[in-house]
Length: 269
Image (cartoon, rainbow, N blue to C red; front, side, top):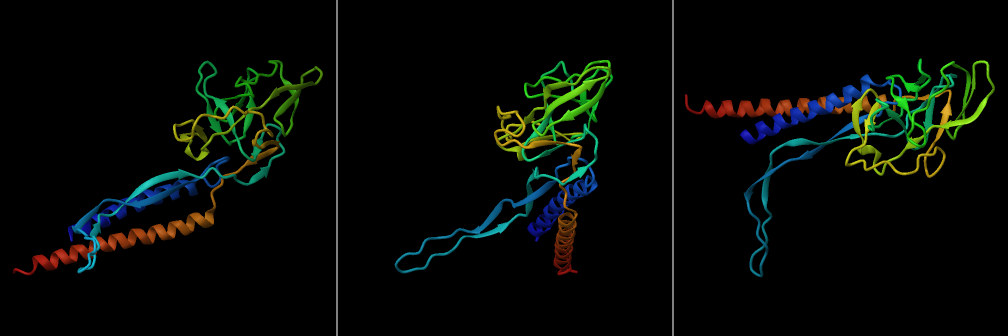
């Protein structure tokens, strides 16, 4: 009976973790460039009650008898599939159509690079192209993108990520920069660091050498659009219902086990 008690407790813990993941997905349903997660379960250790034996000419074989000890969270995986695109009409709102991640640097003096699908960019007071967190957007060579300090009158960004601009009081500068994109052997293995950004990990592998948009399997960059969250509320609410029922069933297991223990204690009054 104690096995079923602790198995039920493990089910409660695992389903609570799954509900936490679902809650985070739903909370970010309108977060630009957000990628959802999924909790995966697996069974844990088994206690052998009776060992099995192979059959012989005179006796039949006997299967091993084992009792499971509950469930645990095997992994929480990222869903890096694309989200829907929303038209904004703003030149510095960028969405990637296909594979790839924008490369951004929190600190221009350091080598650490983060990766994001959020495409809300601005030109700061020093002329750098930065995202909503103030992280510097990088070009195909891994360098920051800086416009003239006197200001920019207009910007055009092609699907290949090539930036042409017209400075205030000047003539158009064509092919001034080219935005870089990164891709990984296992993009689902990227590590979340918050603020809609990811970083390279051992499971994701190092970023591939190809950084040019619309080349080598990388997607195109669409100016005037933003990629929305890839969370599907239909799936999330369905998963929420099944998680809630699983939690209730495991709680019921604990309740029934408690009643059985109570009956056992009542044998001697």
